[in-house]
Length: 223
Ligand SMILES: *Cc1c(COP(=O)(O)O)cnc(C)c1O
Image (cartoon, rainbow, N blue to C red; front, top):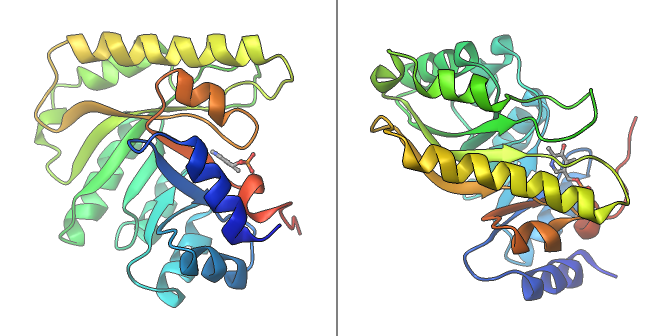
């Protein structure tokens, strides 16, 4: 199977309002270029310095999304380059993204990463933490970020009913946050759920962005 056919097969499964993010972490630049030549324009990376390197080298009309855990001291590598950060998990981090975006004269789209899995290891906010972030008195003054929705990762399990339940939990947060009074720089529009193993369920549960790596590129080359 080629990268081109893999992308075409996935696109056939996706309703037109669902964006495909090709997760290129740990893949070669040649593989990314092959996906690019098949028409793919949105790519996802989970290390700030990898995104920096690839942005600087690869075609400039690629839209780069950051999907990994982000430390505040790495935001400066992303700020001039990234289109969307899917992994905001604290107000402190959001303030840092705003500050660095302002230095670069940019506005950066962000998603709040919500904790929905049973695993201890996954990052993210719970419902109350997200609500208190959305109620921060100074949030409306962060003019260089826009919160566009939520992101989540389901438990890594074969139990697809559990995965579906976790996606529904996220969807219920999304619906609830949509009903509260939000500042002008916050809109509940995007729901970033679904990876190679569970994207069909995610689409059924309301995903607007799927993040797919191995189904496009094959196995990753961990060093
Ligand atoms: C690696 C990764 C993906 C893609 O995973 P696949 O199973 O290869 O599709 C999606 N989202 C996040 C946050 C990731 O780290």
